[in-house]
Length: 313
Ligand code: SF4
Image 1 (cartoon, rainbow, N blue to C red):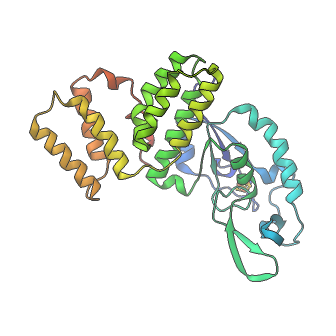
Image 2 (image 1 turned 60 degrees about the vertical axis):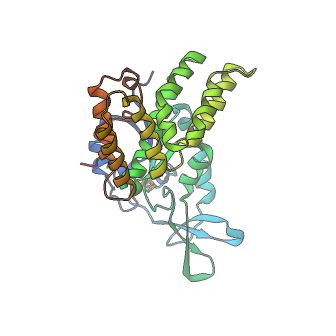
Image 3 (image 1 turned 60 degrees about the horizontal axis):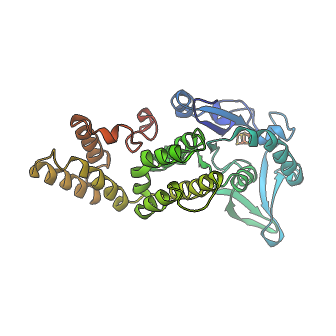
């Protein structure tokens, strides 16, 4: 059984010399920091298509009815069918792995997750933007796993969303197929879910309590779908403050009214943009530990992924 999450990744980001020009795009943070906590499955779809390195550059071209083709930039040879059959072949290995996420090389015609340049047939000076062909294949075959590109990974909020999903996916897959283990997972992730959508906490709780006449597989499927759909959305300042206020409730007997007022001021400063969320968040985490609030020792809220990955050193 795996002991760490497994992330699919564009091989050039790992430093493999697979780019069309024989180079790579090694990402220091991925290779030096993230790699300490997860395992990777590197793939280069263009090399898998049988092209050597170096090779001719590939482009996306929009043809009739919005259809997008993968073509040789110089010769205009159409590689779309070759690409699609190669992806299907690659998928025979990928689907056995049960990946927890995927990191793509930004703007690549094969791997770009969005904003990839697309030429338009018959309109020489116009371009549009789309998703790379391989990234599109992964998106449609694995809709529920977390996906990001190396550009977005540099944004702290987007990185947090990605890592939260990856580690939650890994933890979910480790669960025994029993109601008790699902309820325990629900308890651990309660305040993480609250940070995304408060109302979903009780909805997930109802599913995990399995009052309906469902098989254990159906209960897990229902829970998984709603849980991962919820945590794939962005959080807002309001939802973050709401979850933290609920957590602060566990300290109500330990804090003076001055302390409570100071914490409320910090949350207000975060809301108005004067402070990072980490200021009230770290203070409350410290107070929970100082006051030995047992319930929070098993909570994922402050521990949803290794804290060393919070900042890009
Ligand atoms: S972006 Fe994708 S296709 Fe291009 S070199 Fe990197 S892994 Fe290969």
